[in-house]
Amino acid sequence: MANLRGKTAIVATAESDLGKVAADTTIFDLMGQATHRALEGCGLSLSDIDGLFVSTSQSRMAAMGVCEYLGLRPRYFDSTQIGGSSFMAHITHAQAAIHAGMCEVALITYGSTQRTVSRAAASAREVNAYEDPYRPMMPPSAYALAASRHMYEYGTTREHLAEIAVAARKWALMNPVAWEKEPLTIDDVLNARMISHPLTVRDCCLVTDGGGAIIMTSAERAKDLKNKPVYILGTGEEITHKDISSMPDFTKTGAIQSGQRAYAAAGLSASDVDVATLYDAFTICTLLFLEDLGFCEKGEGGAFVADGGIAPGGRFPVNTNGGGLSYCHPGMYGLLVLIEAARQIQGVCGPRQVDGAEVALAHGNGGVLSSQCTVLLGAESTL
Amino acid sequence: MADEAKSPLAIFYEHCEKGELAYQVNPENGQAVFYPRAVAPNSAQPTLKWRVSQGVGTVYATTTMHRRGEDPYDISMIELDEGFRMMSRVESIDPMDVTVGLRVKVRMIPATETDPIYPVFDPVEG
Image (cartoon, rainbow over all chains, first blue to last red; front, side, top):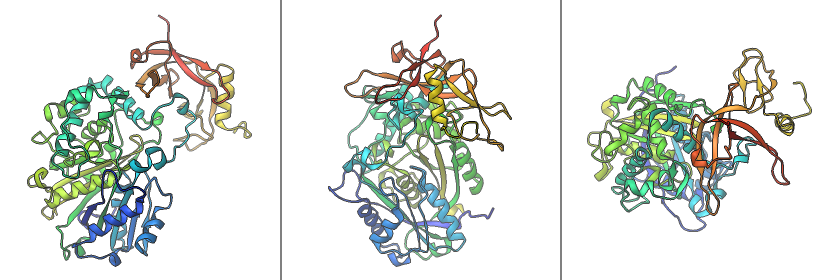
């Protein structure tokens, strides 16, 4: 396999408006807004974009929608749809396409109006004749089932999971665009409305609108642009199942494999990572990914997050934007996971900036722990 | 395939109507397969054989679902003794008393005008 380490870089990122957008705003309004915000001042313009990567649950043919809306005519496009981790896959695919000369400047974009139009309207329900009779609420019930198994095998507690929600909230309070503005305690999480035991509503991600854009190009071209380049050091992908009934082992995710591939490509290990953004659709996600990506041993995630372990000032900074739990979760959150990791490397995160962050890990999750994609990002010093 | 006029799901329902929990095995490697499929997974040869489970298994994972305006109810993953796993519901006890490791036995919930027949489980006596 070709060595792609450091051959491509993220050169611009932007969020669209987040939270709750104006009535009748479309997903393409949000993607267009984020794309223009990303391009502003970065040294590239809309006409430089010749590669497009986009997927959403709200449009079956999203690439056409973006091309039409922005007037793009890219020579390369990809709408890989594997849920919330799609955008990490897009990074991997853009990296390959840029390296192969099939495009030079790639736009990766996403937008969702799921809060405005309702979650049910934002994504079509799929039939599973072997699960539907039991009326699970998907996705929360799937993650609750995984949590129950982790608790049984490793003694993980609801308090451990609550620590993750509290840490996310503390980071969110340092992020001016985060949805949540009030402090949260362990007791608040435990006593919140139960959704699918052991997960309360505070163990579950937000339901917000929002979107974003990332511009990627070759390392050579990145050097001539205005922003500090964020190099793609390594990526990995894995799919283990689609529906939760078929997950091979409820306590081990495909992040084990995607992480190993990303670390191998980057020549790095978990101990080299300065900051991690881990797709936290539910509190159990953060815990599983900390274990599966090697930040602690399998079964020790509870101890790792205990006593503010991943909160500001803790052992290891995770989800510094406040995460899907407290910052923003617009249906598929992976693009925003990548944006925060890239910004940590650029050193532009203000009060929540991790001092001297040179290597960031962004991890995406899709479906019900079904698709896992890991991206390692680095500053120029890591090349 | 033995019965090309019927889908795997239709055959599964036919067994349910007889009070049987059906699953499939790959005769080449003995692997138990669930949900029922037209062809075998992880296998160079596609053929699957239907089997009837003894209907006894162990709770692998469990959650209690809370929906507004409804009583809480159980959703569990059951590992059948023959080596396959399925989603189901444990009945006859409080949903919060369903624990991982609980031994359970299958029972059918008859079809209604709106819903097909489907299997649930009760704790094994004693």
